[in-house]
Length: 529
Image (cartoon, rainbow, N blue to C red):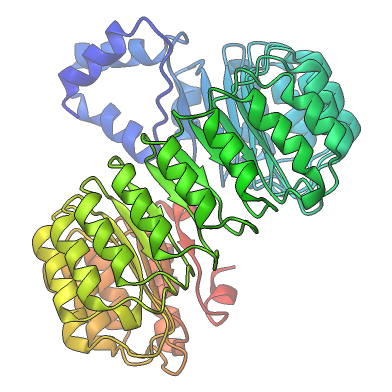
């Protein structure tokens, strides 16, 4: 970003703007302003607490504290400690958004509570992937942050009583997202939401195994404003409650009923009242058939994304109708839709001109010829997840030629592996590749991986899983260190001790170690920690 454009943005914004900068970005910008007056103006902009948010991460802690900033948004990740958080409490008066990552092993609940006590203007609170959270955290939110409008909790466990208190104390909540619980969400929590949260526009709850029909019906009476609804693991006994929700939710643009027991009538009721639907997730749903998908196709012409993964009842007939009736489709996820054939993929190529993401993993009846048509006609494609037996050299070459923005490639299964020449062509042509996953392939030599790393400097994630091969060439790691500065995810499968040591050396040489996610063989992990 040019310095003058940056300053103009920060000096003219009259509305609230959340901008999260990492240490390397902010520190780089700070040092880039060689002119004293420009640097002073930059610091002045950052000091305006009405619209500045900063990523509190790594060395940026000291950078922020030295300048006495009062940010609106705080994202607490990785290296934050109790000592750092205590220092922050003096700057939290203006904080409206607080996001806490998977760090509660380093940050005690007591300090988090203290942060909340000093954040009276807090409107958005997020707990992502943390361990079990002390119930006092939720009680403090209820007592000190009654202007809360957005709540996201993605933890293994929650305290039901504290959560109910929170919902009773925060009637202004517009967004509630509580998922990834180890056990089911309690019925009383859903009932309390139905009693007190009447203005919700976003609701995500799950698993719903222990929730009763009455609670869901009560919730439906307060769901008229919902635009996004995510429910997971709804049992067959919740059918009447889901029908009540379907009839009251008439403004939905995004609907997810992941891993739920459904039927064609229930799906038809949802889409009948929500013709404006743009995103639909029916993955792992029992009871979804061609009839349900046919209704979706005819009722939701604005649909842009659909996930039908692991559904063996869907056939070519309904998929062809879907792509013909929904020309704006950008994302199709058909993982393990085993009845899908070339006829459906050919229809996708012919009608989905805006397609960006296609996932047809474990669709065993597909051939390379059909996928070549997708590569040739869907020129906006950026991501493809496909079975190995459905690929050949021509497919990779067409992706390289016709899809200039293609950045995500994932290959799975073992049966008929692509030739080494095909993988070499991937590395030669797809130089903008950012994500590459080659899973359970046995015939990829280290030289092919090395060439991929050398020719794809934009790689952010590299996953190579070879069950019967061991990575022996440490030149791969050296090439990563030299050519892939943005790489943050690495898995090379089983590797020799020399390669494992090279990975450790590369990891320790990175200044942004906190952002690197190494999912590596057990030989490497003890060397790192």
